[in-house]
Image (tube, rainbow, N blue to C red; front, side, top):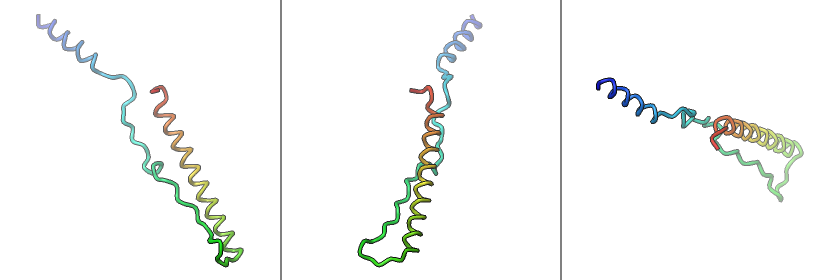
Length: 85
Protein backbone atom coordinates (compact mmCIF):
# COMPACT_ATOMS: atom_id res chain seq x y z
CA UNK A 1 0.00 0.00 0.00
CA UNK A 2 2.87 2.37 0.85
CA UNK A 3 4.51 1.68 -2.52
CA UNK A 4 1.27 2.32 -4.36
CA UNK A 5 0.94 5.72 -2.69
CA UNK A 6 4.53 6.69 -3.52
CA UNK A 7 4.15 5.45 -7.09
CA UNK A 8 0.94 7.47 -7.59
CA UNK A 9 2.61 10.61 -6.22
CA UNK A 10 5.52 10.17 -8.60
CA UNK A 11 3.23 9.72 -11.57
CA UNK A 12 1.11 12.73 -10.71
CA UNK A 13 4.16 14.98 -10.37
CA UNK A 14 5.52 13.88 -13.75
CA UNK A 15 2.43 15.06 -15.57
CA UNK A 16 2.75 18.59 -14.22
CA UNK A 17 6.35 19.07 -15.44
CA UNK A 18 6.96 20.86 -18.71
CA UNK A 19 9.85 19.73 -20.90
CA UNK A 20 9.79 22.74 -23.22
CA UNK A 21 12.25 25.63 -23.17
CA UNK A 22 12.45 27.60 -19.92
CA UNK A 23 10.46 30.79 -20.29
CA UNK A 24 10.59 33.73 -20.03
CA UNK A 25 14.02 34.25 -21.52
CA UNK A 26 15.27 37.74 -20.77
CA UNK A 27 16.05 39.69 -23.91
CA UNK A 28 18.91 42.15 -24.14
CA UNK A 29 17.75 45.60 -22.91
CA UNK A 30 19.93 47.24 -25.59
CA UNK A 31 17.76 45.66 -28.29
CA UNK A 32 14.60 47.14 -26.80
CA UNK A 33 15.76 50.75 -27.05
CA UNK A 34 14.21 52.71 -29.93
CA UNK A 35 16.41 54.03 -32.71
CA UNK A 36 17.68 57.56 -32.27
CA UNK A 37 16.07 60.21 -34.49
CA UNK A 38 17.99 61.44 -37.50
CA UNK A 39 19.47 64.95 -37.54
CA UNK A 40 17.56 67.38 -39.74
CA UNK A 41 19.06 70.45 -41.38
CA UNK A 42 16.75 73.47 -41.36
CA UNK A 43 15.69 74.65 -44.82
CA UNK A 44 16.18 78.39 -44.53
CA UNK A 45 19.34 78.27 -42.41
CA UNK A 46 22.67 78.99 -44.07
CA UNK A 47 24.90 75.93 -43.57
CA UNK A 48 28.35 75.09 -44.80
CA UNK A 49 29.16 72.03 -46.87
CA UNK A 50 31.25 70.65 -43.98
CA UNK A 51 28.18 70.77 -41.71
CA UNK A 52 26.08 69.00 -44.33
CA UNK A 53 28.70 66.26 -44.66
CA UNK A 54 28.89 65.88 -40.87
CA UNK A 55 25.10 65.55 -40.61
CA UNK A 56 25.01 63.00 -43.45
CA UNK A 57 27.76 61.00 -41.77
CA UNK A 58 26.01 61.08 -38.38
CA UNK A 59 22.70 60.00 -39.95
CA UNK A 60 24.42 57.22 -41.90
CA UNK A 61 26.07 55.89 -38.73
CA UNK A 62 22.79 56.15 -36.81
CA UNK A 63 20.96 54.22 -39.54
CA UNK A 64 23.57 51.44 -39.56
CA UNK A 65 23.46 51.14 -35.75
CA UNK A 66 19.67 50.90 -35.88
CA UNK A 67 19.90 48.30 -38.66
CA UNK A 68 22.30 46.14 -36.63
CA UNK A 69 20.06 46.45 -33.57
CA UNK A 70 17.00 45.43 -35.58
CA UNK A 71 18.81 42.46 -37.12
CA UNK A 72 20.01 41.36 -33.68
CA UNK A 73 16.46 41.59 -32.34
CA UNK A 74 15.15 39.48 -35.25
CA UNK A 75 17.88 36.89 -34.64
CA UNK A 76 17.10 36.80 -30.89
CA UNK A 77 13.38 36.44 -31.55
CA UNK A 78 13.84 33.66 -34.10
CA UNK A 79 16.19 31.65 -31.88
CA UNK A 80 14.03 31.90 -28.76
CA UNK A 81 10.63 31.46 -30.35
CA UNK A 82 11.61 28.79 -32.89
CA UNK A 83 9.19 25.92 -32.58
CA UNK A 84 6.93 27.83 -30.17
CA UNK A 85 4.55 28.97 -32.90
